[in-house]
Image (cartoon, rainbow, N blue to C red; front, side, top):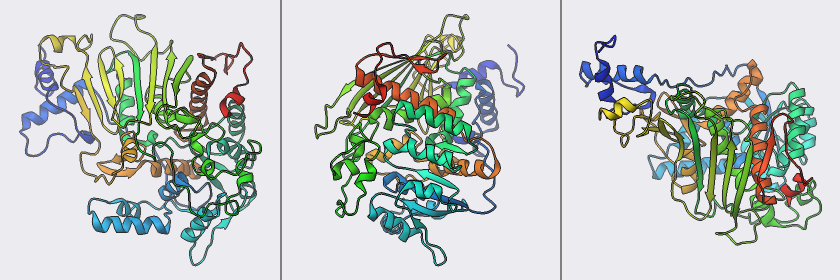
Length: 532
């Protein structure tokens, strides 16, 4: 048996696999370890050949400030503004109080230590006076007061706005983004990208014909573990992946979209007519305004709101693209409160031509099923898993890989009983160098495990949304293409809409990749199905 260049035999390397998880940034070989252990671990890493992929390059934030307009200042709008460096006075006061009572709560400290992105919030547009006034009050300085815009079109037409961040209800995402792109304003838009099929094509074509920088808000594209997972797929560590399972599990009011209805909400403080102006006349309804995700008229349900995150992060890793088929079922089983979007759902996406590489003979393995299931009536944590012929990977802010007992690639190791499929073949924890988790609520933990709240750089915890916005701003200033650009957004939108159409029409939906359209032999009105 040949020796490794480091002096260890291949058998030495194999014997170390079952007992040596790899920690964040491959922080191996501590000074307290013996030299032989150090050499063995380094050789094992070489054998597996997995690398922690470097984060996307991002240029300097120098130059004139980018003048930003915030459109929608509700829950997500405030989070996006904070990630960009602008927190409300109320949030700062609350976080300061929390830090005084809990030394492990570092959210305010992390925010204050965040890099200055060199932007100016020049305008705010929100249909609820209280939210708009809160933004103006919080972001005003001695020498500058952001302008309150009553209609987004006025903001887009303003020469004082360079770019917009869109965080409205879903039914306004695409119309605002289309108008912004036509006006030459750069766009950061929250998911899902679109609400109807027709506006998906219009937005796609408009952005492609423009010179703007477009970024869709799937901030997990900045998450270190997902970037590393790309290398795992590229190196064929898992073998051919035939099944991916992802999940949403929530069991609290916030997770079920039962958001607080503000005490000052009324027909005088809310511009209701503008809110429903692209959906026809609807009587004033405070619950619809604050809990809009519960109705198809304004929201996109579990498929658009939450499945899009899971789909996009798998698409980031595996490059699966738009599925050939989508089949969705479910219903309202846990929250019979007047909503018409399901609170339990099961989606099956089929990719019959997908291949991720093989350790077996060519042509034997091809095809992938992506399963997404969700319930808003139970919070049990179920990991996302990628199931390959040679290994299975649990995917989150951390990675864990188990070898398959019937694996071809690892067959010799398993037969020699030096590799136990019950023990992780590989684990990756980018937080191993530190980072305090101040997350407490069940819903927040759900987002955190999916890389939607924070990631790590060199063991330090960093806001994922901050990195995503920074990437967008870097492309505006320095050129380049954001990681979640219009091409990625189109794939996300079509996949989500296919899933929703399947649920609404009660049948399997097919995608024609040559015609770039959903097959429609029955002449269905897809847009109507999506919005009623």
